[in-house]
Image 1: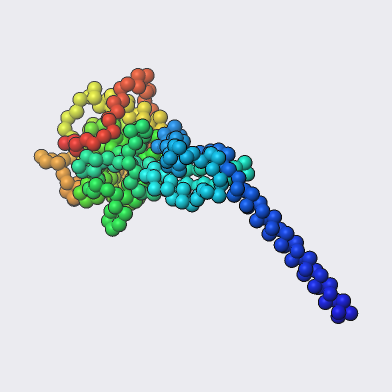
Image 2: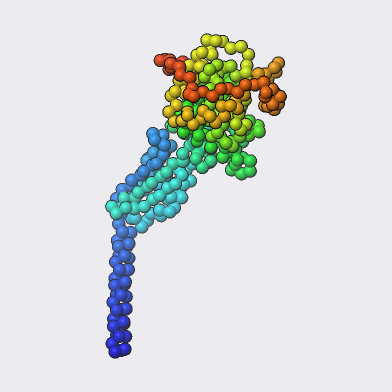
Length: 356
């Protein structure tokens, strides 16, 4: 019985070996057959910003096949080094990822994912470039015009991802992404100045004031406090009443008044601001109304503009005499003007700091 059992085991093992060998032989034959086949065509897919691709199919084809006299079509598939071609594509300044493969129809599939610019940066010297979603520098392209948040006075000529520079880049990423995803702030923020202390000051499209933003910490709450101030204070008296609005301190907004302003200009600014607020459909107003409304404080400068430290000292010394802004159940509603041309959009470029 043991001899028969051993014979059965040997036969079964031999059968499995024959089957395995046959499968391997078929695979090798299939691979050799495919390798000996010729490239039928090249299909190029470019995934980038809708309607704003940095590359086109012709440019990608020139990268993978620079010699026009030696096109990919009709070349043996075995002659393609796909990994080397992917590395060549990745050397392009606008390519984020690249994937090349042959499909069952012998078509070389080339899939390119472009870098996604999220901000435009102007350096102190005036040079300009994009920053992508990973915080890396991307050159401008004369064929592409992107509407992005603009940061000015970047202290270096290139983006550096080390030390304090890496913190600044992360702050720019957070602030820029927040603005890009909010219709109101894309319409209202003209540019973001980077100070020598690597903090931020926002210059608005509507209103002649400077928004002291501080660093990138708690950026979401700072924008919410600023929006709340616009709704509860500026929507009542107009934007041009203040020379600066400081939102960098937690749970408060510090506004510095300017001199006498034109009543006509104040009414016009008020209407323009109200139109922007009403046009913003992506910000939930009700969730903001009770966050800092009782902590908004206004300080008036004396003979000279107050520094931030002086404003805070002035507020602390007069805190008992300053009445908080009453909470509003909802922002006042004004009829928007029918002529949208009243809103003057500031060109998105390097601009000198305005004197307030």
